[in-house]
Length: 119
Image 1 (cartoon, rainbow, N blue to C red):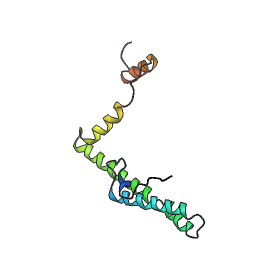
Image 2: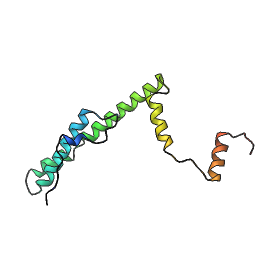
Image 3: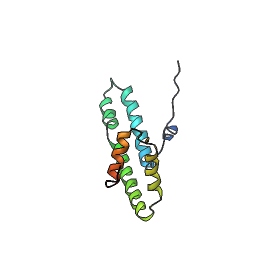
Image 4: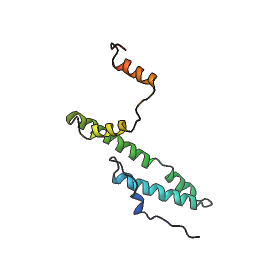
């Protein structure tokens, strides 16, 4: 049975966040290629070489750097534009959460937000 393969050009068609960049795409392609080579050369002396490249943290470190840089840019933008991209991002995350419906939870929230209000 034949297996369908995705080619390297199509590998970058993943869900790209705002923090995604070309450095991460290249590191990801290199990591996947090294993983495939590592799996195919298990009985070869080159296996250790490919395993070290595959288990390297180049892609993870690039993602961490990019996410940190993007978060700092969002924080800086939030200072200058209070209802800009940072606000929209937070509101998207908050709107996904279900509203509390249990009476105990609701009363605790009300008492926390309005400590001096009569019940």
